[in-house]
Length: 322
Image 1 (spheres, rainbow, N blue to C red):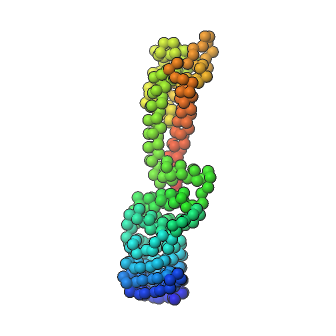
Image 2: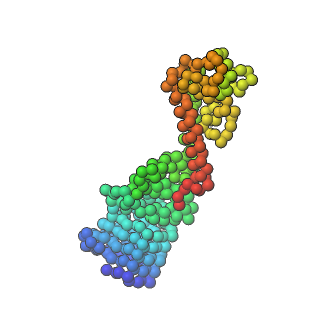
Image 3: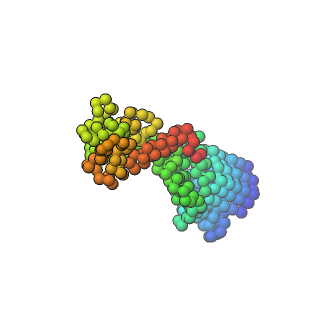
């Protein structure tokens, strides 16, 4: 037991054997080490290595050791120099509050996320997640110029919040959507895939609707001419399917389509029709199909507003959590 002890140089535990199964086998709670601490070749700890609150001035080295359980809660070190295989298994690591300024072996983001997740027991429940270790690792990786790896750690943190955090109800569903749409703000250009998907869906749905006569001019006299003759008057803007799908999805732009062409009315009368006799809607689409066109157009425009807002918010850092 070295509780609260102070050592000006290094502390090398290599080759040691500490046995107290199920209890603290190596107790260094609150200890100060001016140099480095070595947990390396030949070290075996059958029980818990309690390094809570330790202050290590230089390196914390963990290489080829066999440790049943370890706690570095509230500890600090200048450099973390570790081998991921030397850490204990799931639920046997406590890194909450552990700080370090440099990582000697960054490894891959996936490997480091697996390391962080070893803090969770196999039967982890909601509310058991600690976020500080993720943020600490991401900060160090970013300071070392590994921006992509740092983002991956933060995205993994938010994924784990969804699985093991205390999110409930609407906040949980919103968090899930943020992850799928913009990776919680860390990958804003992911939203372009969603926009592309809605645009392609618009090509299919509006294309079928127009071919069946279910997309008509938005003005009543031109609409009546279209229904009677199968085409709009010569002076009226032509229907352009790719532009219409984009105009419906992105209301912040205007391609001269959204305001001139609309789905025919599902109530079997053309929108705003006041002429007599009023032309009926085309027979190529059933009543159900016309409602699909209307509902999809509303949903398409709403999705466009939401996705573009999220994209701009992510670019401006308004959505991202640091």
